[in-house]
Length: 288
Ligand SMILES: Cc1cc2nc3c(=O)[nH]c(=O)nc-3n(C[C@H](O)[C@H](O)[C@H](O)COP(=O)(O)OP(=O)(O)OC[C@H]3O[C@@H](n4cnc5c(N)ncnc54)[C@H](O)[C@@H]3O)c2cc1C
Image 1 (cartoon, rainbow, N blue to C red):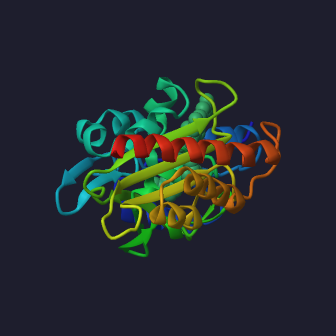
Image 2: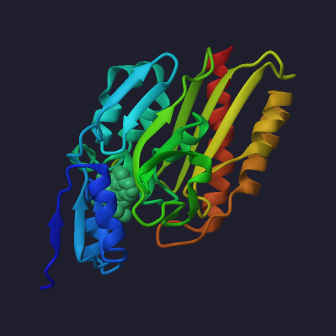
């Protein structure tokens, strides 16, 4: 059996420097629920795993009216789903976090790991995209902000470079009167990865001809989770039956799903249309 060294740095600077020094040999380890499976299946074989969970502040969750919500990258998904202000004001994120795996998985799984693993089906990402989240990244001795919609570059790939560590996710306060849906289709009802995930945030917006603003994001149907601006533009104009159908078709056309062992591309495409239509209608019902 290959020997692996477990490293537990005390600060971000220490962790980042270690990653740079052992570039290509060291992997960050948060909950391990993705990493250990990648290692077991032989997709990665790091010499060092670098546990960042205990670095001060990385599990903290805070809220203030101006900055919005800040979630430490190493906060567990159960902590995110259960935090009272997240449930009350950012319910979309709480609901999506709660769909990840099982209670036991969510006790280990972190929000930062869900994002940095960069799976197209990561459940927290479509909600964070429609909420306009910002990723804070530590690297090269400083922290910088990266809008989440510029964070992913492909399946399993992000803008993070050598020594970069996601430290927190900042989520602005949703527009007044917002309501939402996260519709996740899996092969079974419980503890399954999304075949399709659709996150919709809707809110009154007097400047739009329809009177409403919609933000729509899709998971598991493109190389990365994506926003669908074409669909959003249609329902900014009108929310009659025809417009909702047109928006659902636009979402379907934007999606670029693949066929794999879990579902065919054709089925995924069809389900994008169905779930987008259903989600818009349900959000609209809440708004009117
Ligand atoms: C049984 C089971 C069911 C699952 N079901 C779902 C599901 O329904 N939906 C879903 O979305 N996921 C699911 N997952 C996947 C997984 O649980 C989540 O993606 C989880 O949030 C990953 O977080 P983690 O802390 O365990 O990440 P880790 O495994 O520790 O890390 C994942 C990757 O991110 C990197 N990383 C971690 N933290 C950081 C950081 N702060 N900065 C930079 N890089 C970092 C690691 O190096 C690694 O490459 C499931 C997993 C299992 C085992």
